[in-house]
Amino acid sequence: MSSVLTSTTSKSSYFYLGLILLATLGGWYLFKLKDPSISVSLQKQAFRLNYSAFKNGIIFANYQFIIHEKVMLKKALSLNNEQPSKLKFLYNEAGFPVALNKQQKAQNKPLSSQDCLDIWQNVLGPLQPKISLKPADKNYWVSLSKNNDCVFHHELLKSMQIRYKASSGKVILTDINS
Image 1 (spheres, one colour):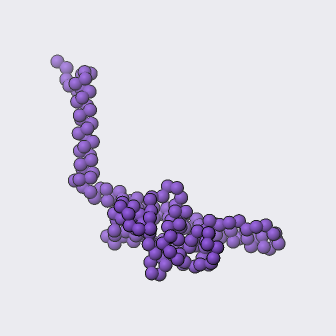
Image 2: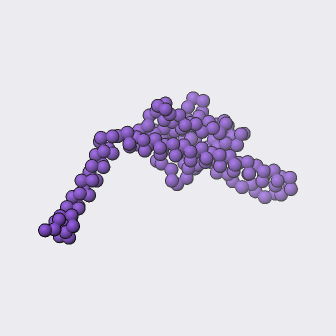
Image 3: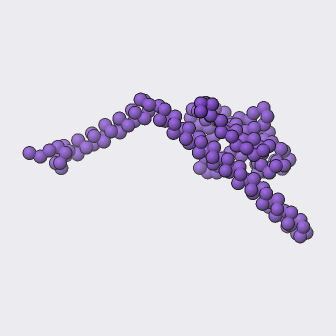
């Protein structure tokens, strides 16, 4: 007599399909309903990765500014009348991005949440998470603090923030729970 596990009938196909379905439902139950901390833990890890990417992007933008300044100095010393290359960002005196280079007016800090949003989007590029100017369901959002720091939030992670201080170029991850 053959076993259900070793036979190749349609009954065994249904058995394996049912087994896979039960395993999938069980995993979903454990992941979403039984232990929501797994989902929160993954969200926190993604937030930390975005912090790291943003921090490295600010450092890279600062390097672009430094290189651009050296090239411009070299051109000025050689009395070359070529047009200066356009930079993506508007930089403060310390060489850190404060807005997109569309205003063409000097500023030393982000002046609006839109400036912060533009910095985030252009530093992180096309693989960034969704971000908006107001709290949105399960998304990132940005605000401008009273001292003109950009503060990036995640709607599901109320205890975590990414703070960008344009005056010094520091990117700080704040986690109240740790």
